[in-house]
Length: 255
Ligand SMILES: NC(=O)c1ccc[n+]([C@@H]2O[C@H](COP(=O)([O-])OP(=O)(O)OC[C@H]3O[C@@H](n4cnc5c(N)ncnc54)[C@H](OP(=O)(O)O)[C@@H]3O)[C@@H](O)[C@H]2O)c1
Image (cartoon, rainbow, N blue to C red; front, side, top):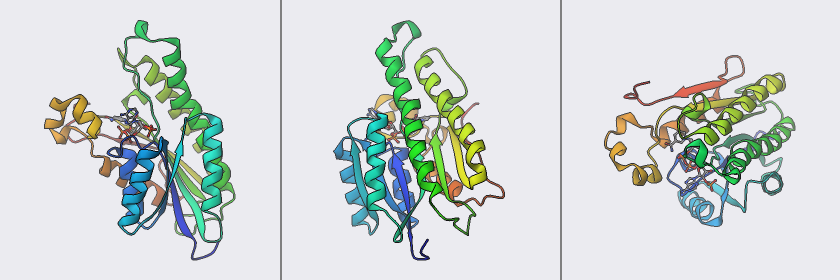
């Protein structure tokens, strides 16, 4: 790897640009990373890339039609083609994609169950495969002793099912299982795989619209920027003492 190679982060799952995915892109851009943005549809990726580039960053939009394995593999091919050695090194990948269905079990349709598992689990397998194959080609980055870092965003539902979360929790449990397995399998290759349990509501525009009463006490919610700073910390950890699982909750959460 060239000493001058610029580090690249791939961030997948950006919603409308006010949540954890977009904050992660902003925080890493400020830290000097080039940012490859993946989301469904062109609007958010284009406007976020423009915002980051106008602020002096280096970001590129990669919209996908779906989170099928085929679309994810294809978008990673485009990302690798744009961010190739010796000028770039793809050093981190953040799987922030999710799809929630908040319904009692008997109201769930087979299609919703299938979609939840496809987006929360199958897409994570596809994304992880591409990230790991990419990192395996990297040389060790001396400041951390790592070839790359792969981070997943989890939720309370990664650990606990509840009355309306059977499909979502099944997906988030699956995601957590994948991250633990990959941490164990690829640690020996100096590839850091970490999972973050976000144990509380995140203050996104969608959340504020959906449950305005909960946004009144911001100390009981998580800020997407604070989560993003935790992700940067994970990526900067060195391999002698790295985190598999980070557990983030707001100060006033009654857990
Ligand atoms: N929001 C919360 O209170 C909360 C709490 C605990 C854990 N989490 C987890 O934290 C991660 C980040 O969530 P976030 O809330 O901060 O959102 P985000 O980062 O803006 O987007 C994360 C995922 O949610 C999808 N999404 C966002 N807005 C959507 C909408 N209006 N309709 C349909 N899908 C939408 C995104 O879709 P695209 O893929 O199309 O971009 C993306 O896959 C997710 O993995 C989530 O499960 C969220």
